Length: 69
Image (cartoon, rainbow, N blue to C red; front, top):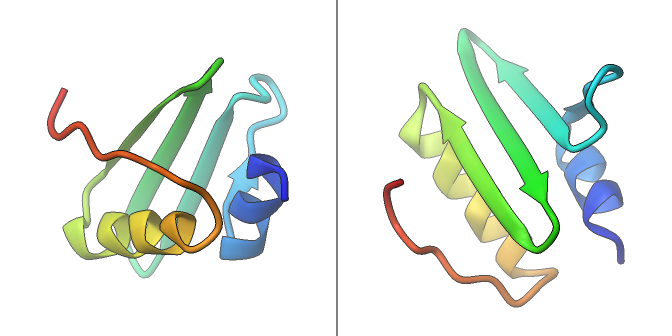
């Protein structure tokens, strides 16, 4: 399964002006997922949502969490 499809399945919206940026908003929280080749950056204002995203992606892909930027 492609990464784009997985993010859309989770509820992210793909940014129209930058197709490598995905945004998820829910009840005042915002989570942004940026993709560059095989690197990804996950940022947001709700740690719980970011944890759920990482858990969701780990069920579909082999991922590594390298910690804070």
